Length: 98
Image (cartoon, rainbow, N blue to C red; front, top):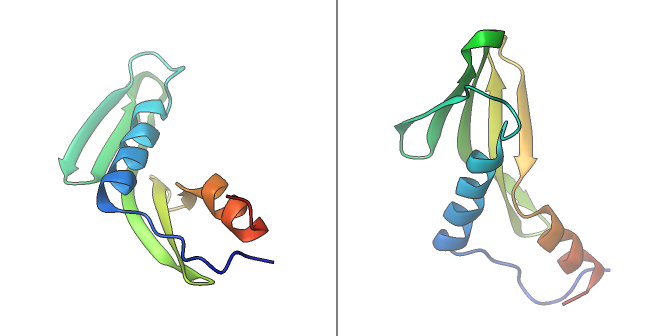
């Protein structure tokens, strides 16, 4: 059962969480090249391994009235993976925890 309160995230929270994701992405690799091409649209590569992805911030919709802010990682073959930026907060909200 979910809480009756509304779960919202402000712009600063969203940008901070997204930037944390970008900073941590491939943090264990060496020679990672990260470049912000447009606001909130990054290219990240490990040239020595032929690895290249783009990452963008996107709201993929609402689930029970909660915005689903994700970092969308798109690989060079077109495959996309969504990383929910506020998964823990949404889970706690859904369980009624505060």
